[in-house]
Image (cartoon, rainbow, N blue to C red; front, side, top):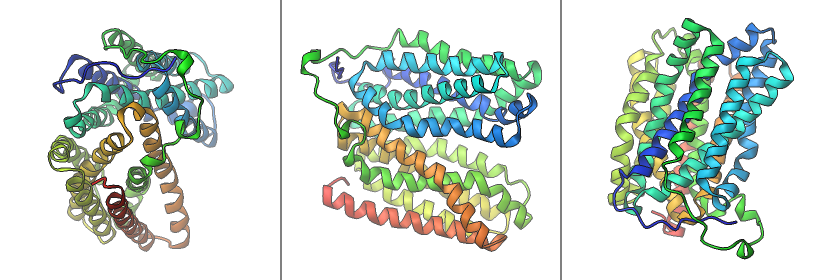
Length: 396
């Protein structure tokens, strides 16, 4: 049976269902990031090789990448509350399985379960929460959802390590599994989306149920920002070591703090003025941060690039996501979200690979400078593309 939103348009942002889905999103992200920092060490500790550990860790992203188009189809056609319930149960099973087995085939199975649950959940959360956000506050509502996930990335790894130190790594997996299990209770109090049409009227599955072409103008710029994220995460520390720059970890703290501050402001600005007031300045600042990073040789210059990148991406990313959903339509928010996230998955995954190939050709600090400058030009190219695409389709 096809399910679409038949709830009345919400009149305020901070309604009960919006808050509950926000909490559910935070707990799911917390669960993921709690184990992200210990998984490789745990796998090596139980006797796997470092290569096999890398394969198992990477299996999560591959599962997410290949299941993403189907997530959008399910989100648009099935009951979102029930689907989110199933995805969180799947996540819990995948995580708790690590605590009770050292059998490699079973570990592969549980990793796929966890990856599939997270992929479905991350898509459905957006598809569900959008029905509880007033249309005139879409940018702000999506921005706060990004903040909830940012809190997870900042706090959950430390919590996971603390539990591992106090009670062992298996205890961390059990605690991480308890969080998606807890979300199942919260889901009981979320307003359910009722079926709007009988099953006999359900149309056949088409290509546009898996991939939404109307989302491409937003997905391509977002994929370049994710491309940069993957490169920064993989190579910034190595760049700092090559330069002899100490204390580089503070880069990520500065980035997280200013991203936290910028997101809600950018969302309100987009809702009030339009997407062009956030996406174009945001991408320009992000490109500038990468050009500046390429010539940085002190920690203070590197931190300035962190500040500029946080402001830029904090303004552009949630605006692109909100704009994508607004343009495609809330009744197709599932496939719009999955197409958008697919671009992010590809950018995040291929960024380190492309950068690695470049660094193999240009060794040392000059190689890193070339990579960061390339990122700057790539973002500018994406910004120019979005400018012409938005004018043609009257998006901005």
